[in-house]
Amino acid sequence: MTAGHGLRLRPPRPEDEAAFVAGHRAMAAEGFTFGLGYQPGKPWATYLEELEDHRHGRNLPAGHVPGTFLVAAVAQEIVGRTSVRFMLNAFLAERGGHIGYGVLPRHRRRGYATEILRQSLVIARAAGVGRVLVTCDQDNAGSRAVIESCGGVLDSVVTLDGKPPVLRFWID
Image 1: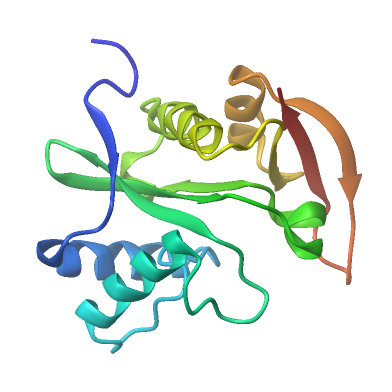
Image 2: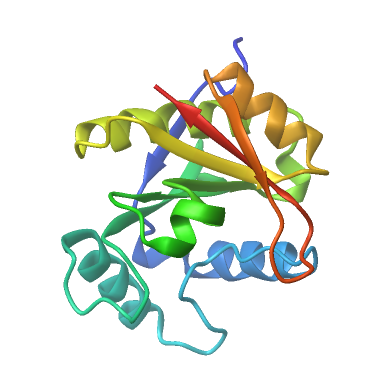
């Protein structure tokens, strides 16, 4: 069995709410936002509509760009997520990049992050993104290894507002 075998990226579904909220809570404990734009207590159907609008570039909140937010599922279980942005604004060009992904703590070290990024690159290319910017915190050795294994070439290190340094990689 290959690493990441059976992983599928797909939009969150109505039946995913409980697992998604649990994942959001688990990642928040590490200071990572799992559900972009999700706030506890927000009606799930409303959140799913917002994600669909985002994908089509409709009703975008200030500072947001069109993109798609997908969960990574293995045998119906959510193991992580990805956000693929179809363009960059100033913040994304400096710190966020085209793709932001995460693997839930109990599913790490199984090759899922590499497979999520690999599939996210296919989605970015299909949306017309030529060179893809992917970033990670300087102290995140696991994410750096994933980005490099998917063809990422270190471009620069950015430090802003006293936050930890961020590594910026381009994937051609």
